[in-house]
Image 1 (cartoon, one colour):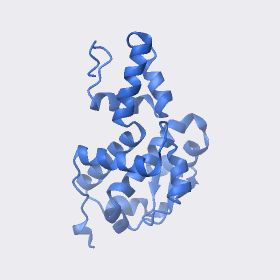
Image 2: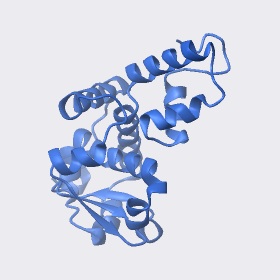
Image 3: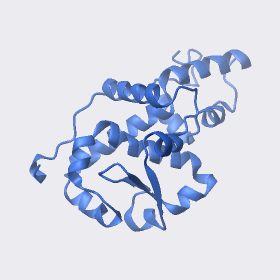
Image 4: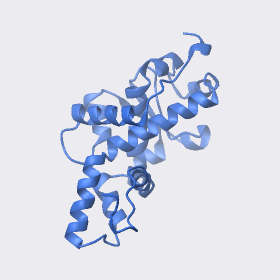
Length: 200
């Protein structure tokens, strides 16, 4: 496939949500938080290669190789527990490329850190932004599935007779993601804690 033929599939939000749900059903039969690193290592047979200063050097925190064998990841993020929620999202994002962009990503022939810039140069800005946006959407739905999000919020509101002050913190702890991810998922699902109806 030539560079001019490289195209990211045009998935709808519903199609991405369906693929995320299928991924969870296949690889994780428990409630959240999902152990995405364990799935990678034990079920997908993907190994992690921590790279010192990857983010500073290459402006990425993680990158999956085109043979799907390795995820290169910023060393500090990988070893420091303070970054666990960020690591979960980074890894789920890379798995999004596996689930959504298999043929496209394989055509990039990424084998190691030296291929990161080649990776960028072989994609148009539109293709890159589309692939990243789709992988972000996939990651959010794998880590915070809609049905479980709604059920948890409903149970939380019922228990506290309203929205507790630490509602977002409870969601962060429940799903093992950052508050930014929770806020984006709430926004997408049109759940507003400032309205009595909560969009439920």
